[in-house]
Amino acid sequence: MSNAAEQQKEEPNEEYFRMREELQMNMAQANTSANNKLYLVLMMVTGLAAIVALIISLVVFSSRSGNTCVIGGTSNGMTGTGAVDTKIWNLAIGHLDNNEAYIDDLTGQVKGFHVDIAFEVCKRANKNCRLIWDLYNRCWDSQAGEVTRGGVGLMGGWYDGCVGWAQSYDRSRTFQFSKPFTKSASTYLLVKSNNPRGVDPTDVTGKIIGFIDGYVSDEFCLKRQQGVTGNDLPSTQIRHFDSLQDLIDAIVNGQVDAGFSTFRGDVPDTITLLSDNPFSCYLPNGGVSIMTRLDNGLADWWNPAQDSLIQSSTYRQICSDLKEAHGDQRGNDPSDVCLGM
Image (cartoon, rainbow, N blue to C red; front, side, top):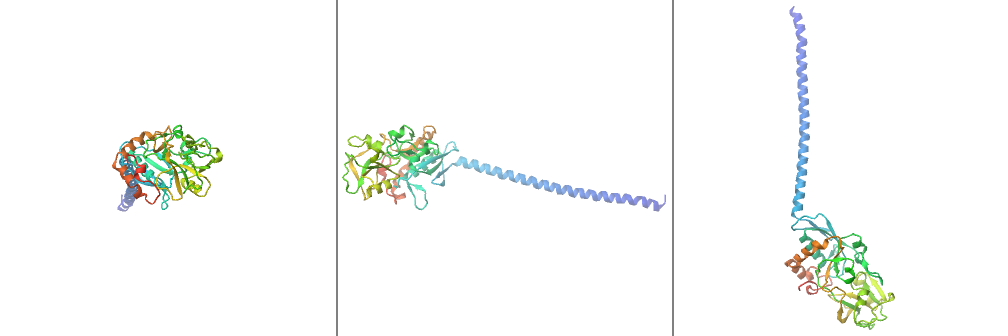
């Protein structure tokens, strides 16, 4: 075969090898690009898994180091020991217009001795607690002249307990109570200063008497008092009001002849408390407590935690701070409220 023929035969072979080499290079580049993409995906998945693991570890650490107690709409860190309870315990609270429970004008939240106690008990019990302001009659309802009964909120499970409720005969038929965390309070007939209508604490015949809706000092408690004539009031002599201040206003402006209410602390200048021998509407040794349903177990953890608190210096500090921390409110001295003082 001639050289020309051989050259013509070799040229396709060189082109073939050149094209094969080029194809191999392209495939190598494609494989490299694919590997890079796969590596990037693997890195992203690994990073995401690490972030998830970190979040889980933080949640576990947080749950082991304590719960959160939600009081008055704010979150406050808690400490405590024992098993973590994920349930949120809803506690209803009203306002007494004194340093036991009042609405702070600046924050709009309920503050006071009852709030301080609730926070510390939940903290010691390692429970998640949320304090909810609501009307008193959602916990215990007393319509003028009608038999008192459980309020729709506590009966209906809107919350697990109500903070700051006196133990009474009527309420104990429906609800249970924690151990008291304050002393009991006396009940009085309240009249306008200097008693211009001449109300006699031993005879209320024909007198229009005001009561605070939901309070332990209702018309049925007045009826139980010994030595008071005319105390089985007809409905025409009964008036109900939403708060102590509303009752005081009604006494001062003459809507009622007198009010019947538990009372302690500072007495307004416009009011006189009658009776040298105050009445009582509480159960014996039954001070202010948490009122709760029979079926929810709140008292089971509340009582041990409260016992621990009352035996501690923290309780004494809360008591001694009563006038300092809430001193801008009408109210009580520690000796009026606190157990053992």
